[in-house]
Image 1 (cartoon, rainbow, N blue to C red):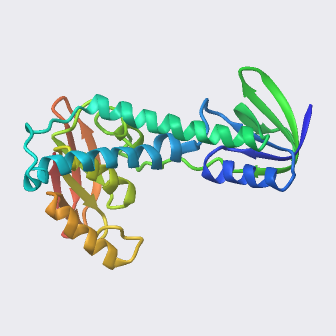
Image 2: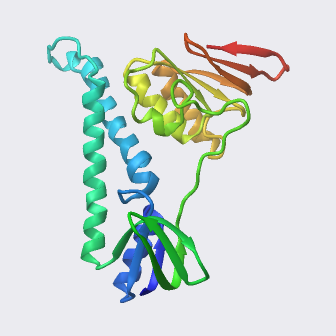
Length: 261
C-alpha cells in the first residue's frame, strides 16, 4: 500500500490548489478524483464553461448591435450553437490539461476513482482497479451538490440545472430562471444575448439577495435593457413539464397563485 504525507480527495479549485501547495512544501502528495478529468465542477460544468459561453454570446451581441455603428457591413449574424458549444469544450479541455500539467510538474500522484475511508488514514479507491492508499493527513475537498425543493425536481430535458444549461442543443424561445442569484443570471445572460426571452422568478425583493443591494439594483438596470423580465416576491410552488413547454405555479405577496409559461 502506497503511503503519502497528504491525500487530497477532490480535484476542484480547493483540492488541486491544496495538493500543489503541499507538494511545494516537500510533502509526498496524492490526489483522488472520481471523474476522468481534473478540475471539479468549476472547470468542467461551472465557472470555466459558463465564462466561455458568456464570451461567445458577448461577441454575438457585439456583431449584432455594434458592427453597423462602426461602418462594418455584414449579413445579419446567426447563432451556430453547436459550434459555440464545441469551442466551450475546447476551453474546458485546455484548462483541465493545464491542471494535469501542474500535477505532473509537482510530482503529485493522481488516482481516478471514488475515494472512501476505511479508517482515519486509509483510503479505498474504487476506479478501473481497486486500490488502497495511506495518508498521514487527509484533505476533503469534495464540493457540494444542488438541493432541490419538492415539486421542482429537474427532468434534465425542459426542467434543467446549470449543468444542462451549459450544453443545450438549441436556444430556447423563453427561458425561466428560478432564483435571482449569480449562476442563474449568468446563464440567463448567455441565452438572452442569443435570442431567448428571459424571465427571472425571485422569492425576495431584488436581484443578488445575498449581496449588497446596490449591486443588485445596478445589475437589474442592465438586464432590463437587455429585455429581461422579473417577478420579485414570488415563491415557486410547482413546476410542470408539458409537451409544449414548462409551466410554473408561483405565489405572489397577496397569496395568489399565478401561472408562468
